[in-house]
Image (tube, rainbow, N blue to C red; front, side, top):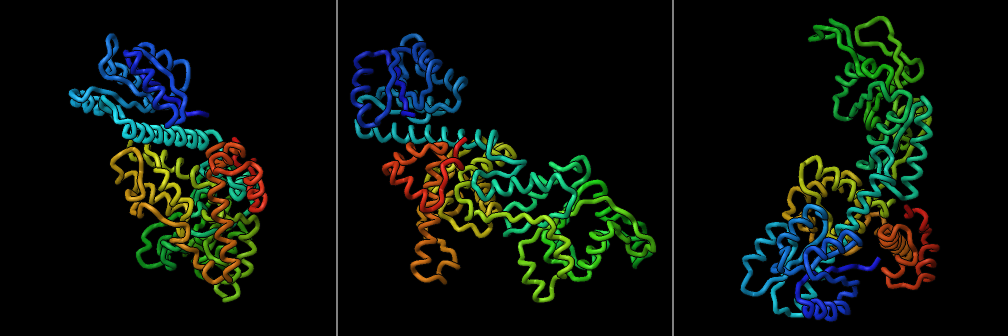
Length: 463
């Protein structure tokens, strides 16, 4: 869609002069209005990216137009024009919501630069709105966000296992969303009206974990002055989520194995077993098979857990999801923190696409939170999140790549770059290959050839 600029001025000669001088350099479609009333009619009839309006006009003034546009089109960018002697009015316009102002007579090159910046803001707002709409309408499964093939597989697996009552083991690196996946399974299951009890296994000392899980009877040990209901009983008719189960001791593994086999627990100090109707979902960021070989994890317990495995992909395996995730996290935390809507600067999004996220989605979420809190304007820059303004694609290399032969390492970096870069272009065009090729500066056939080589499918990005 071609960029559109609406110029509002009561002087016909000024309108025609601006149209002739700006159209070739800005390469946009220009509409003209000779009054504030005419401008509102134009805005009501077609989409406009930027309004350039004179402040002093007979009838409806530019300031009045600014106020009305601010109420009716709050995300529309406005730049005000004023004579050199009326700078104070322009400053007042900025306070009332104008993005910028320019003074007459114009310096053509300076005017082009100011309007290009204003149009870039409009493009950023439009893209941010589009991504947030996609997060609301598509690409979102429960609270999981993603359009990539890797995440579509996760969504399908969650939908499938939720219909059963079998044990699920969710694997993946820290910060990939294992907790959200467990909650999605519970929410889609027939147990959704029952409790969801999450236990962070590493955070509970081993000598306390057993009594937390299974409960105890009064007098079972020193300071047990009353009966305590365990978390398994609290989760009765619902789901218990054992997060990072790879960290529990062999003793607890043995007791959990009995729960999986018998559907019974025995509180400490009790002689009777208690039946519990609980679905178990477990997660780990560790290689449990390697732990079995080191005799740190029971093999029979592993196979009881690993009935329905779901692997969460690392963020670097689904780079094309980063713009969607960023838009989702920005909207979510701006609401939570009661802050006005913000956007990522294009250069920051580029850094995000290139970054090797050791902490995955959680790391990116923390960085976005920092940006929301420390950015002074509506655009979050790299400096706002503690990053340098520019960052090359190899500035934060994958340690594994440096161990590969040169040709293999180069191919991996090229694969990652092409998937990130072309994925970003296809995301911005909704999967339109021709439009993405134009943005890339490539012929359509050349882009298709690259897409075939790296297994990039346009259908993944259509909405």
